[in-house]
Length: 148
Image (cartoon, rainbow, N blue to C red):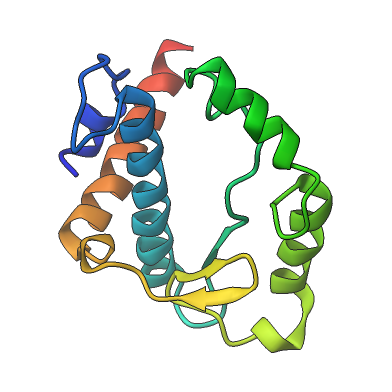
């Protein structure tokens, strides 16, 4: 992950590590969410726990809109299968993380995929990048406020 301001610019369509521009943007966004959660936890202190929820792949969200038509048709067809994420299934799981005592100890940007606490890759824990993302967000918000 490069500088957050550079990452916020629209993708060009180039491939990176075998992913098209939309795949790179999606991966960068997920990484940024983890960075932001870690920095938020440091800034708000111990009174509130910060965690990240990933519902899993959810067909029909538009993430595959650039995929071949055959892939899109398969995606629509499997949305009805048990275990495939849907808003109706993912909503209660997210509510559980916010409300159930089972998850009360989550903090430090804990990453929950569906209903399982998941360890993140080392690249998702970088204090310098987390701090820079926070600073870049502040810069972009300030710039936006002055041009509005």
